[in-house]
Amino acid sequence: MAATKLLTISIALAALSASAAAIGVVFWRRKAKADEEKIQELERSLKAALQNCGAERQGRIRAQQALRKVANSNDSSNSYPLTPIAITRSCFSTRNGTPRQPLVVPLAKACLVFDPTRVPAASLEGLEGYSHCWIIYVFHLNTDLDKLWKHPSRSKFKAKVRVPRLKGERMGVFATRSPHRPCPIGLTVAKVDIVDGNKVFISGVDLVDGTPVLDVKPYLPYCDSIPGAMVPDWVKADNMLAITSVSFSHDFSASLNHCWSRKMQKKKKTEISLYTSPTEFQNLIQQVLSWDIRSVSQRIRPHKTENSSMNNATLEDDDSQEEVHFSDDIVYHLILEGLDTSYKIDYDGNVHVEKIEPCTPN
Image (tube, rainbow, N blue to C red; front, side):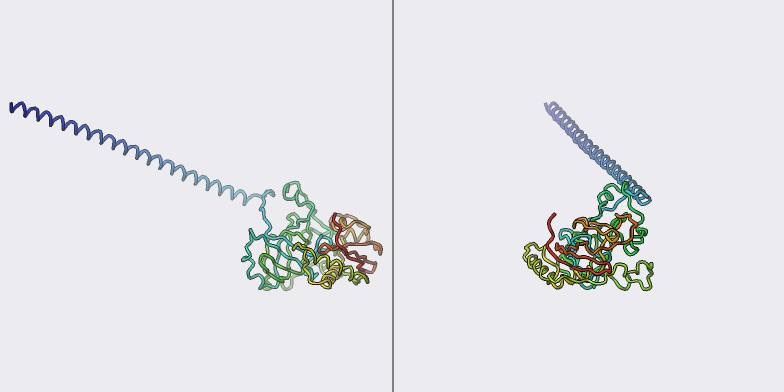
């Protein structure tokens, strides 16, 4: 009896041991499987990381190759797009009458209005400490501008342009300040009058209204002025464009006062004058007309024409070799701040200003 009971207990213990062993095997297999899956996951992660590193390396190599290709390329289609940072509000409403060089008309005023979304007012702090500044801008009124930028390969420019101081004779474009250039970028200098928020008021300008500004830099006399710099003799011939005298008709002041009163009643800030009085504005007219602002073609073949064609005349559009003719009957127009000034010029170079009136809308 005792032996049977002992046998039963032994069998039970053996079964229990077998069950424990079986359970242990199951748990071990599960753990081994989990470890194997973890190892496989790590292997996949490592493989992906290696692939990413390889792709990044290949990307860097391709980028470096592309950069070297661009750097070594002579392809004229390569471009560097620039966005204007400011727009010019100038006293010169049209190209006609805008000085060909800066500072020759001290009363010529303008305001550079900076885009506040791109140029914070803080970026202009300190500029008022300089008397003058450089302005880099775009010749935005060039008639071939669209073709030049959109289809540069089809665009052609004249290697030589007609020079006013040479009575229309031609000179290489890079020996002149002509606006018609392969890259229509201009450089000028102006007197800094006031810095007010996102606006810079300047004078002595040669910029037409609406000119896009690319950059402004302070003028530094110690490095921007070059003592002993040389220029060709024809550049020194200022008297070629100088006017003998400027006179005004008897009723000019009255008509100017009338136009001024109407102008001061304008509500739009963009229409408010840059000048403080009719007298200052008349002095501006006198300074502008102290130089012969007519184009080469107008001086060679003076003819009656509408304001629009007078204002849009260019130096390079006329190939005539005729001698200069004069006529006391031709009426020319100068448009400043939307006011149309009519004048005549006689054989001796005397300018007679006849009247002033608001411009007629086209």
